[in-house]
Length: 114
Image (cartoon, rainbow, N blue to C red; front, side):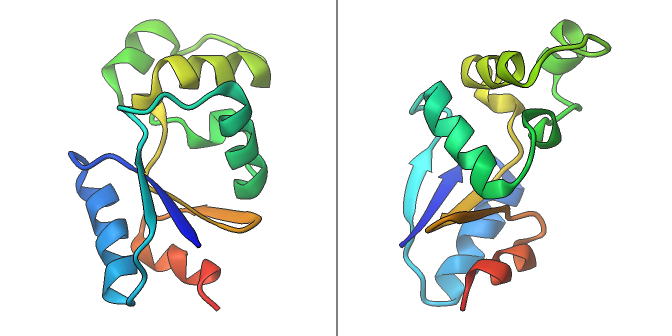
């Protein structure tokens, strides 16, 4: 089962979701801006991505620039920040079983398709 953490207002996120659908895959879709991820859920996603929280930040977002740019935070603090400001997460995040990828560009999703 594929799961996509999706922002329907984001062109890249829509492209990733469409990429899956074009391959005949109907994923479970979580609109993560409406559904607040818990700290544990985000940590689980990061493990599957094999990334640190800072690796998935969207540093061009206004909230990043105004509140977080240039500041040092621990991984746990970044996880908390990302759960409070989910707009800062890169998207889409596509999860299958024990692995995940950021589907930008959409072809990265192929690593999850066997």
